[in-house]
Each structure stands twice: as C-alpha cells, then as structure tokens.
Image (tube, rainbow, N blue to C red; front, side, top):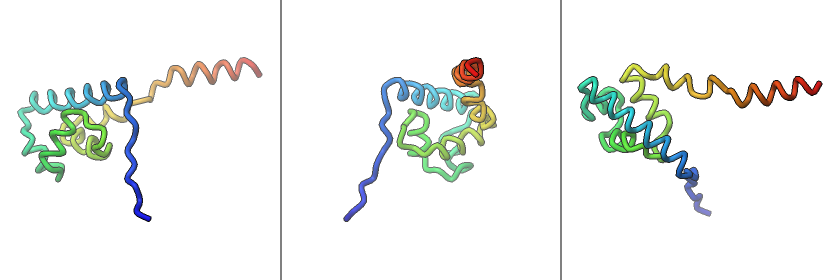
Length: 99
C-alpha cells in the first residue's frame, strides 16, 4: 500500500503570519544586499526554495527557514517565538488560585 504524503492544514490567519515572515526575510535580505544566489550558496538550499521562503510557503521545512535566518544573523529572533506565553501563565495562575 503506497503511503500518502500528508501536508499540514494552513488556515488563512496562519498563512498570513507565514506570508509576513517571508516578507520580513525578503526585506532583511534586501537591507543586507544579499541576493537569493548568495543565500542559496550559504544555506545549500535551491534558489527556488529561497523564493518559496520569501513568499511564506507552508510546505517549506521550518529548518530551511531557520537556515536562512541564521545567514541573516536573525536566528535568535526565532527562539523568542512563544517565549512570552501570557495566556499560558494566566491559565496556570487560575489553576493555582483554585488550589
């Protein structure tokens, strides 16, 4: 039985966030005068994949996004995602107050 390749469901709000990430990456490249070819050479990714990243393509591996961010010196920014979990803290506080 052949295995089906599954892909993640990406809802419009999530796609908007990915598109914004791609645009931010594209602008960071332009600010540094980094061409797609340069990013491709430094990451080992194809120029097609770099273009997909700049468009916020959800089918591109998160590792590839990280590789590009590393070349741009922005990988630390990615580590900040979800670090300030305000909702999680509020839920935890509610639970703690109930005990």
